Amino acid sequence: MVVFTSCKINLGLNIIARRTDGYHDISTIMVPVDWSDILEIVPARGNETTLTVLGRGVDCLPEKNLVMKAYRALDAITPLPPVDIYLEKIVPDGAGLGGGSADASFTLRALNDMFSLGLADSQLAEIASTIGADCPLFIYNRPMLATGTGTTLSPVDIDLSSYHILIVKPPVAVPTREAYASVTPKLWNRPLETIADDVIAEKPANDFEKSIFAAHPSLAEIKQQLINLGADYASMSGSGSALYGLFSSLEQAQKAAEKLQNKGIVHICHAV
Image (cartoon, rainbow, N blue to C red):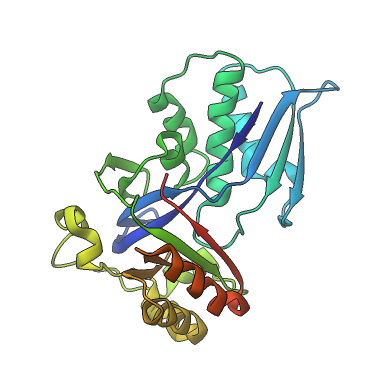
């Protein structure tokens, strides 16, 4: 079985409060987009499940990869036959795009289909939430308002089909722990869910940007360039370091991609 995964962008991200368990309460709208890794799952040649990663390097042992964690989590609930998994990484990691989370969730979905397990999306999402905060989104693979620690999801009707989404991933690493440590949590005067119907016009902020842009001015420059090059809305995705712009014109998006190709990895994609 071969599947093409997704990744995501965040439309606004409010870090509301630090929790007693060390995590944070947030509010963000996450929109899956069609920049994909390629996942192939076949019956194992041997007696053990294996993972082979191709394409962009991932700096972790196979057993610690979220794909293997997904297999193990599902296998613990309903025993699975061994499989050989091949993952071609195309979406850059360390970007705030949820590429690894998508790989894990699409693994759960593929195994559910491959072995006719009959698990509902809600059951798969519950398993996915034990793997990573962004993982449940990709079980449903549609725009969602994420609250709590990011795993409480509510569908939102946001249509980005008219936009061409230009993503720029510069060669800058922003560890998630560092990103949260530099933010002062505060509930917005206008909560994100109240402006979801007109989120592009409202241009909600990403609370990570202030401190991350101060530490990495080149990211702020890329965001401003996206706006100067015609993006109707530009933002950092998640805790970065990827930035994106929404362009109503494909020609503008292509011209912006050419202008920004020296800034890192650039890719034009669309909402799922």
